[in-house]
Length: 401
Image (cartoon, rainbow, N blue to C red; front, side, top):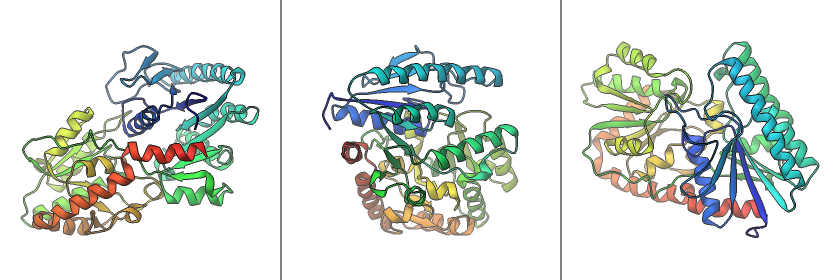
């Protein structure tokens, strides 16, 4: 890759540079490009949306590393349906103007496309067919049908996602996917295997180091606490252990990043199970507080069920868990067993089984000495797989081929 000759543009509907897992991933991706003397500009198709936190900066801004990002529509994502339509229309018009500028610009351009709707993708793909512009698309997961609401909006979103996947999947020049499931899925659709790279996630291991604080919680869970992510199974496992007379506690760090909070429903579930006094909910907090809370935990958990979504994705928090040098309890979903071995790097339980989760939690609580080696080996394996500085070198080689 010739430095300075390639023009990299990232277009996304996700937050950037902060505000959830996708924002963190894209921020590290762009930082990795900059570390290798490659410039990239970011254009945001939708406004900022992260709980009650509001973006108050200018429409065009820069990160601490000097990465430029621009909101094509409103800076803050609206809740009102009419305002949403106006926002999307405004964003689409500015996107078209951006694409026209790319079309008349001399030199090669690569558009990096992450999490964008079909009506944004169509003009981008049309541009790639009529110019020297290359398209690299990220695919992080396949959304399960059950996750769409049974409403007109839900059906439209599902139709848009299916059309994006079915009809536009062959158009990008290259794909960066998060799992073997997604790679095989694209190959079945006729996509060339040599143009697909699997990179599960990116983590800044130098940032996610444990803070020197006193242990306060037995188990830590970080991320949006949807029931689909297996939190219900973890709560039931806790209830089984408490009934057995074991003393343990859980902290749930996070909430829905947009829309209604999930915490009241989770508190009701804890009350029904009789474990309310053993579970703490923090809501949305910044990354420094996430790190502090995780440092207060004896072990960290990701107990997802076996679904299309979990088979096709990869847990965004897993790299952060490993970097914190804590024992990790995970269920056997997706690509987990391709990278990590039970009892060597991690402790595995069975998906959808509170009983299995309970047994493995109890084993962790009773085998502190054996966990030291598991933690060290797990950290080393995850460092090679997920550390963004190392991973970005692989990605850049793939992009330049």
